[in-house]
Length: 243
Length: 258
Image (cartoon, rainbow over all chains, first blue to last red; front, side, top):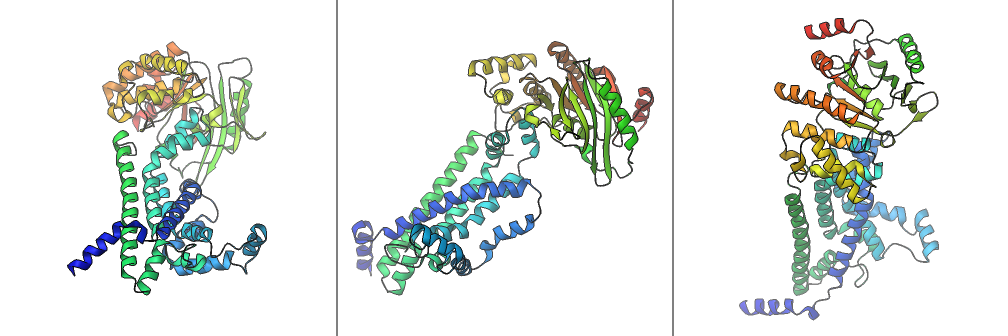
């Protein structure tokens, strides 16, 4: 028992013996999905926090649904939406010469839909904490709406946006079901770390499962640690800024 | 912000508005220092319908809480869009419902001192004052910030964050920030209400002195008749969303009695 543990520890440090592709793909997919969520989710969060419009509640529910639906259901809906039989799916196929399903792009899309709600939710909370009087003050000082957003609203809501980004990335790294449905589980192409661990366990390859799990834990943990530290540094710089 | 509350007991007076609006507008042409306001805005159970004009100097909008003073100020600043009427400042039309004109806040050159000051909490005092000076060369900005800091007697406080200042100091910074971009009109919403009595006296006098030094016309909102008469050259009495005509002294007496 003691011997075999030593062997495993040795194997873990021997990077060549583990196929790192799933970890790399997980990181790329999660980072892409998080970036996409920032670009699209922050404006939606601001919109939801500041504007009253028809269908607002509907949009809010739509944004929140992926948080409560089983990931397989999200994946299935996406399959219906952009799959080879769907209208958008056929348009994509004729445009790019290849379908989107069972590609790394599909993994990004599935992960984005599953993870973005966490960012929107937290960012919306962050924006709602910002008293609109600051934005009004900026307007009377001659600033455009875009400038007001980037110089006043964002800096005051950064705590919520950062928390949302962290949650979104964490959820993205752990994505399994929606990705499996839309992107499949093709080793070397769409097999992310979570899928590779599942495969390894199914195949009885304990070493590979443990190695991938530990690596995934280390990488995700490190990324979260980094984000938390960014939050703490900024808090010290602008002590009490968002109060 | 109590002025934003709905007042169900108010009633509509379309006639008063249009008469007042005409008289206000006819006063405009030959007086470049004039602000003329005739606006109307319906809310559920409450109608704001005020008309007045202000000449050079300090004008006080006096009235009880919920009268519509703050809403009027917000409309002049472009933060609230009325449904009807006209706002003209120094012969520039800022708002005209009939011609669908609504100049955005950023282009009005109207300064605003908010009741709770609304200093940007993530920026230093100097950065707050420089905020409205964007687009100017760095050296000019710095010079203007220093000028403003000395105007309000806070020359050593530029590097502080707003939350490290007392209420009176925050009020002075808000004043400096709004005056920095050289507005053609300064609006002040209950500028002294958040301060204790002795400080209120002193800052009232300072406000008056700053007006004399800068020459910027001011419109200030207050519910204190003594404050209005101490600081302002003229007083407009607003109650239940409308300007009350009649001797100002009666209105003041009534307000004191409340």
